[in-house]
Image (cartoon, rainbow, N blue to C red):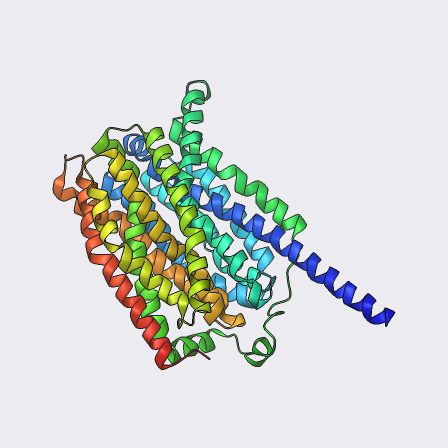
Length: 443
């Protein structure tokens, strides 16, 4: 009897220790996610300085912020995720973080548009590792019934820092402006150097303190039964379940095209259309975005749990449908609001509704994807988000805004048109994905 009690106590201690280690890793992954967004979005606060010093247009800046980053980020993510599904995830993750932080620092010393584009591609290559690795690692650190919370916490960083990263960027910009005369570098260059340093420190900490978990440890027979993790098997799996994955990825691409346009050009809209300076634009939009993003990050996973308990079918996908269709009117009208207060209020609602995408996509991949394919399934989310959404969104919005050249509200009109076209279409795609699950549930 004593032996049984001792064994039970030992098992409980082991589970508790494993959970504590898991949350420690989640905290590091969240910090890395935060600084990845800072490094990714910082250029949207630096458009004036970069445009003047390197003599580039708004459309070129849109390509720089979006396309040059997105093409590498999305296409590199697939082969990198292939290795993440088959080899040591920790080592690949650390290498990726060192690469992106180093390239962010190097961007501060670019002397031409082409050089800056190359450095930004390096940032994209490094960041392409993070989320597929995080989704796969978290799934192997928590039992299936306990994954929603840590995954939602990680995903919440996207909702918070998608615009909240601008607060960090604005603080860095103010610091850079104060030291620029004594350092002899333009403020935008100093900002990029500052932005790259924190992730480099976190990479060292991750390398020294985190152990690689056993793959599929909490997935039981499924992890053993589906042994073939080759790329051919992955493509075969996607083809067999195209009724779900095709509209799922297409809907993601459409709504993220709009959301990345919002994140990229709202500071510029505040500066040109409402006469804010760059730092205050970053602070105001960042504070509103973080507040509403936090509410959304809490609300949407909780809604999914409640819907599931009440018997609603596929509540995760239903949450994505609601986020797009219920939010479509505000997403369409918010950018064209005539006052700064109304614009920021509307953008807060946009961020709240957009949090459904950021918080529920990783949970969907963990729920519907088999253990040996999760990193690659997540890399396809990144492909649809980045190659189409991030790559197309900023330059497309800039191109549309060019029709009202010289008008301070040009980007507001362009974002209105994008919201009208893309958010209802994305909601319909998720609706069809949910219907695909009803007709042919995933194995």
